Amino acid sequence: MREADVSMALATSMDAVLEQMFFVTGLAPVDGSEPAEPSRVKTQVRFDGEVSGRIEVEVGARAAAVMAADFLAADPAELTAAQVEDVVLELSNMLCGAALSRMEAGSALRLSAPQVMGLDESGGPPAAAERSVNVGEGVVTARFHFETPCPA
Amino acid sequence: MAYRVLIVDDSTAMRSFVRRVLEMSGFDVAACFQAGNGAEALAILEKEWVDLVLSDINMPVMDGEEFLRKLEADEMLKNLPVVIISTDATAGRIERMISMGARGYVAKPFTPEMLREQLERTLGVQYA
Image 1: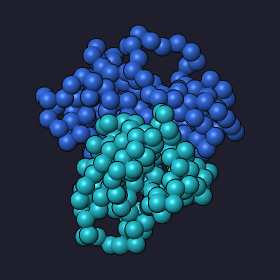
Image 2: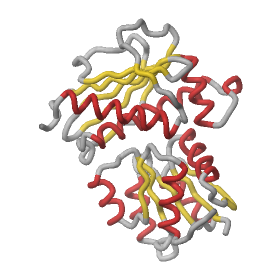
Image 3: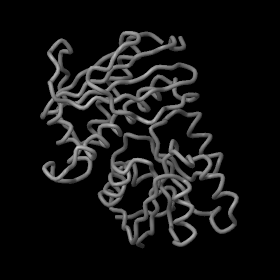
């Protein structure tokens, strides 16, 4: 699969998940060169099978709280940090599954349970695709890293 | 008609979201039970009658496939309508779950309208 196909799958999946599950409208792509917000939630989902790798998702802290409140139909001020993390974990799970399904690389894959990562955790191969969007209250960034080549 | 529904997903947030979207879609919920995996769902089904199950696939302890197998093997539960709600939208997975007894499949992400259309097909009704 070409890098452009991966990028398209990621972009289409991000828009669909954010619009349909988080009711975000007016998504605006953001230049990834902008500095990341200092306070954010970072998660990853690993996948293994025909291809292997992981998706990383980072959400600005304020955006995460507002998105969690919208997802749970709750008051942002009443949500716990654990509830906000739970929603960002589910976001990363949906992004991973939706993008891999669009690449038709998902049929033989197993997804791991999503995990919260430390902000400094990284390493491994560079991202094959990355996209950032402004959801109004902050930025959501997703990156796909493949540890094996995608099927052509 | 008001339905008794069982939602099975290891994410508390997703269970809450599905419950909310069910109601947003116009579905009349008489009772809503929740389980974090297939084993918990079976324990609920031993005590409660439900009209519809909405289940994820990838769950710890007992995943959606094993849960479907258990339902199919139970004389009292094998005709219970199960709709799968999953991030896996590949044709192969959908075919597999339908062949195992699922009556419908909704891929995440989904809108209330998508969920409603699938439930109407599964239950053979149209609801306002």
